[in-house]
Structures are given as structure tokens and as C-alpha cells.
Image (cartoon, rainbow, N blue to C red; front, top):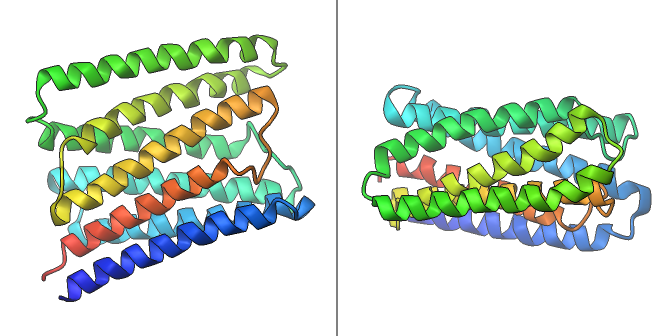
Length: 258
């Protein structure tokens, strides 16, 4: 009973946070110069909460065995992304740079992909054996097509954009890594279908998918000039972090005794 009550509490908090995020973004569009700093701080709070949830999972399960590698990888991923959000906020709030891209924040974001890939691949190597070769082949093929499509659409903006080498590299790297993350996430979604362990993993993979979708939109937005700090597209980004946090919270409840 206690575990079920805590699960409902988790859904209530996540739902309330999602609604609040959407409302804030709708209202804040008229805040002018305050829009960027306020939303920057919001993402420090959201990503930090997500990292704390992931840390609690690792603290309870340890780093040994298959689950240790999986949980450790995802914790390190979201922790590095939290450092990236914090660094971005320092640029925006303290230094007054609206879109610090590229910057030191991107170092943390980019390195966050590596443990995410390790955790996802380890997860699939342990639990994804029953997916079937045809299904895996279809998903991977879809991923390759998606990477080609994304890079094709990016080629024209990249050709005319006046950016340095590091910015051009990031404009290509982010969408490419995100598509790989989407492919891994879809494979993970097909692995567990329900239960007290499966449902939290579905929230985690949904979070990764939402973050990846936002990153692709961010790359297009910065290249085409329509993105600004506090843009409503960041709602997808925030919902991704909230989904990840809900998934990690579900994992905490899953390892607790009933």
C-alpha cells in the first residue's frame, strides 16, 4: 500500500511540475529580458532534481553487476547534463550571454552522451535478447535513415551559416548522437512492457527521446536563427527531464521492500 501511495505521489508531482512548466513558459514570453535568466534557472533546478533521483538509485543499488553499470551510466549522464545546465545558466544569468553556444556547457553536454550510450547498450545486452533480429534490424535501419535525413536537412543551413569549426562540429554531432539515443530508446521501450520495473524504464526512455527531439530542434533553431533562450520548444526539454526524474523515482520504489 505504501509503495502504491508513493507511486501516485510521484505521478502527481511530475504532473504538477509539467503543468507548472507549461504555464510559466506561456506567461514568461512577455517578460522580455527576464525570460532567458528565469528559464535558465528552471532547468538547473529540473536537471538537478533529476540527477539527485538518479544518484539515489545508484546509492541504493550500488555499482556492481549489470544493473550497476546501467544505473551508473545514466546517473553520470544526467549529472554531466546538470553541470551543463548550470554552466549555461552562469553564462546567461551572471554574464548576460543569451545563447552561450558553443561554450564550456557543451563539453558537459557532449560527454554526457557517452555514459548514456554505455548504460543503454548494457541494458539492451542484458534485457533486449528477446526482441528479435527483424525488429532490431528495422529499428536500426530507421535510425540510419533518420541520421541521413537530419544531416541532409542540416547541410544547407550549415553551408550558409557563419560559424567556427567547433560550432559546426556541434551542429552535426548533437543531432547524430541524438538519433542514436532515439534508436537505443526505442529498443529499450520494446524491452519492458509493464510492471513495477518496466514502467519506470518506459518513463526513462521517454525522457531520453524527448531530450533528443529537443536537441535536434535546438540545432535547427540556432542555425536558422529562430531559437532564443526561453523559446517554447524548451517545454519539450523540460518534460524530458521530468520524465527521466519520474522514471528514476519509480526505480527507487522498485528496489524498496513492499
